[in-house]
Image (cartoon, rainbow, N blue to C red):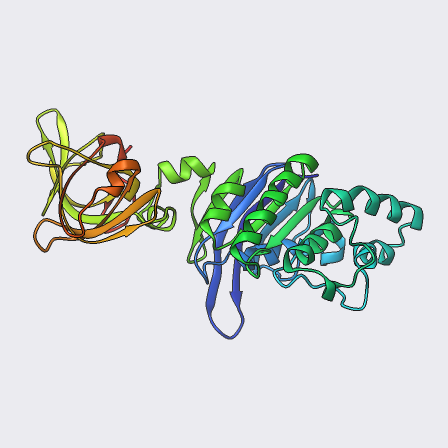
Length: 365
C-alpha cells in the first residue's frame, strides 16, 4: 500500500473554459479510506479519474508513495479501479473475469489460482466462480468487479460510485463488505459518492468538494459536528440543517441569535469589530427537543407531521409566517404530536451553528 499526495491539481476541459478542479491539495494517508463527496459537477469523479491517469491535469503533481505519477499512463501507476457499471466481460466466467487482468500482466497461472482462492471466499464468490455475469445479481456482479481489483494487489484502490446501480438493500450490504475488506486488507482506497450515508459510514477521511475546491476535509464525525461552511452543513445530514437569517448580539456575558420565532443562546462566536451583525443560524432537526420554557427559544407553528414509527419529522415555520423549519422528534414524544398546532422547542447552545451571511463561513469556534 502507499500514501497519496495531491498538490495544486487544476483541470480545465478544452473548448469549454470550464475549470473543474481549482488547485486541489489533499494528502491521503497510507492505508486510509478517503471518501470524496459532493453534488454533481463538483469535480469528485474528475479528481478520481486524474488519480487513475484517465485524465491529465493542466498543472500540479500527484505522488503515489514516493513516485511522481502525474504524467504516467494508467497501466504504470499500480492502481485498480472499480467502476459504477461493473465492466465485466459477459462471455467470461467469474473465475475468468477475476483472472483477466493478471493474465495480461503475465502472472503465472499458479499465482493466479492462489490469489483467486484467497479473494473469492472474502467476497462470497467461491460458489459462483463458474457462472457467467448474466447469472449473477447486481450485488454479486459488483463483488466480482471488486474482486478483480483486489487480486491485483495494487498500491491504490479507486472506487467510482460503485453502489449507485444497486437497490437500497444491496447498497447497504455491499457497503458493509467494502468496509470489512478495507479493514482486513489495510489498503489505501479513494471512494467517490454523492450519497452522504455511504460517505459518513465508510470514510476514515471525508472530503467535501464544491465547485472544484475542497470545502472541508477530516474525520467524518468531526466534519459533521463542526462544519466550516454553510455548504458543508447543508450537504451533510438528513433531514437537512435548518437555516434562519438572524441578528447576532452580545447579551451580557452570553451571545444570542434572534429572529422571528427564534431567540437562542450561542456557545461561542466571532463578532469582530461590531457588537451586532446579521448572520445565518443553522440548527439540525435532531438537535431540538420539546421544552416547557416560556417563552420558548424556538416557537414553531407546524403544518405537517411525517410519522416514521421510531421518529417523526415535523414541518412548519418559526413564529407566525416566519422561516421554514423541520424538527425531528424520537420516542414517545414523536407519537403524541397533533396533526397541526404549535411546538415549544429548545436547543443546546453548542448545537447552534452560526455562519457569516455573505461568505458562508462558520463563526462559531
